[in-house]
Image (cartoon, rainbow, N blue to C red; front, side, top):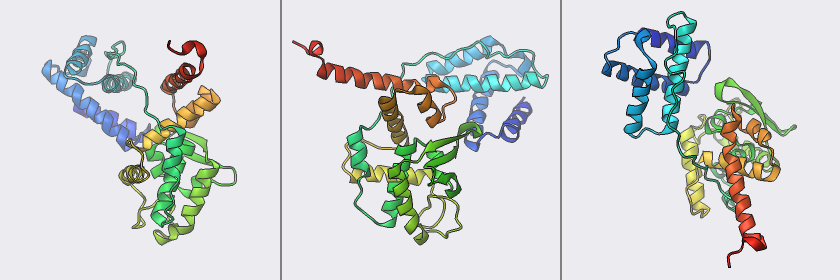
Amino acid sequence: MKARQQQFIDYLKNERGLSERTIKAYRRDLVQLNRELERQDITELARVSEHTIRALIARLHRQGQGSRSLQRLLSAIRSFYRWLMKEGLAEHNPAASVKAPKAARKLPVTLDADAITRLLEIKDKSPLALRDRAIMELFYSSGLRLSELASLNWAQVDFSSGLVTVTGKGNKTRMVPLGSYASAALLEWRKVRGEFAPLEEPRVFVSNRGNPISTRTIQVRIKYWARRQGLPQQVYPHLLRHSFASHMLESSGDLRAVQELLGHADISTTQVYTHLDFQHLASVYDKAHPRAKKK
């Protein structure tokens, strides 16, 4: 059984080209499946039934696992059994009709435009400050994921067209706007970057030792600047991505465009920002409309 799972992992890595992080998530999910099969004394994959999977989901839900974790687990089991069926090793997919318990939709936290301005108006002109400002400007101007920004190479940045080419989840490539502020910040950083790394280093962002910057360093530096600039709330990379999406939707109303810019495969993932936008509109209405004011 474990040998089949390893073959599936090899397929995900070699044929589908999934990232190491995604592969690790699949491994964790298959370990959870194995534990359940041991609990139910099931030693053959062909004996796994819909009841087996429902029992697994119910038990983990009682133990406090969230809806998103359970959905991911079910997705991994479905993928595993689709592969088994394709290979002629299983006749049915026991997870095909099993659904995870629904969770209350949690709206993303965002920064308003004033807070963004406050965060990015950095007076410090030291090389590290110029690098960090370029990082934050790029997050907010382009809506990049943390991993996408950390791995960005100069060859992906086209200053003349004002576009950045990004390879995101599932090896899907998209083009996102650079924005004039981010472009200016990147050019400022490029002028002093030679103090840290040689010109032949392809990565845009490097540490003060000249190595490609880590995702952890980016998180720590953004947290540092939020405190230093006097923001009352915690700031992290995904918060800047959320803010980009919310402000774009608020200004344009174009959900499909925001989906493309964020690199979401499913528009339902992007639709959470319509709820944020509605919150904003409702707030404006309550403040401005004569009939909305309480007596």
